[in-house]
Each structure stands twice: as C-alpha cells, then as structure tokens.
Length: 179
Image (tube, rainbow, N blue to C red; front, side):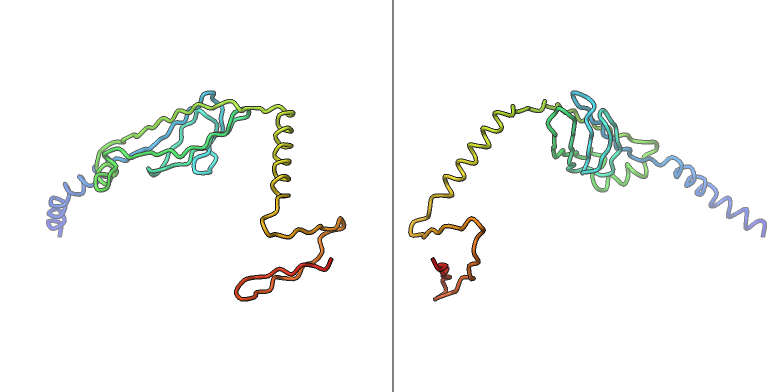
C-alpha cells in the first residue's frame, strides 16, 4: 500500500506542484480610467453613476462606449459618449490567455482630459426681451386662421363644451355651437 502511494506521489506530484504554482502566478488585467478636467473639481458621472470629483481614477470592467457627464458650478455641464477600445490582448480568444495564463498583472490605464467651458449668464433684461418677442410671435401666428376656417369667440368664463365630431362619409365634421 505504501509503495502504491509513493508511486502516485511520484507520478502526480510534479503535476500538482506545477498546477499549484501556475494558479498562484496567473495574471489578470486591471482596467483603470483617470478623468481630469480643466478646471479641476467637477463632479463625474459614468453611465449615470456618480463616481466622484475630478481628477479621479476608477476601475472599469468592460470596453465600449461610456456616457461621461461632468458637472461644475459656474460651468456648462458636459455630456459626451466616450469610446474606450480594447487593446490587442483583450480581443476574443487572446483575452482568455491574458486574463488567465500570463503571469503577473497587466495594467490598462486610460486617461481622459476634458476642458470645461464657463457658463454664459444672460442678463435679465435680455432674457425678458427674448421672452416677450417669443410671446408676441406665438400670438401673431395663432391669430391667423387657416383658409376656409371659421372662428368663434370663447367666453371669458371658460370654454363651452363642444360635442365630439361626427363622421360623415369617412370625414369628421365639427358641429358649430349655437351662437
């Protein structure tokens, strides 16, 4: 019995030792993204999740398109779709080897730099002037009736109830309320 056990150890010992060593040496890929802004101090959202204040580094799991949003008081909110393409060793089939068989750790570091633009503050007078111009243009276009249309006056105490249109020959007709 003892000789059988020693034969098994001699036969499988190097294999087990090699497997134990390889499992401890297997690699992995650490993906990190550093986001910097000018000026610093913007709040960073990645895919609508709050990450922190720039400059900041965060890890990510997958490559592809990411929604980056930067928010800072006094600056325009910047929203971009950032494409993060994989390196050659992360393509299918090769990624298995780089993630599981390469000893040590592979580090994929990406740096994204963004320039924030100061927020434009419109003076109150100019804003009110534009609002009044818009209001006047809407009233001017709403008072123009379509050709062949009839107009009616809505009483000040509210609109009267108008019955639903009746279909005649496939075309709806709208009855006029009594005058």
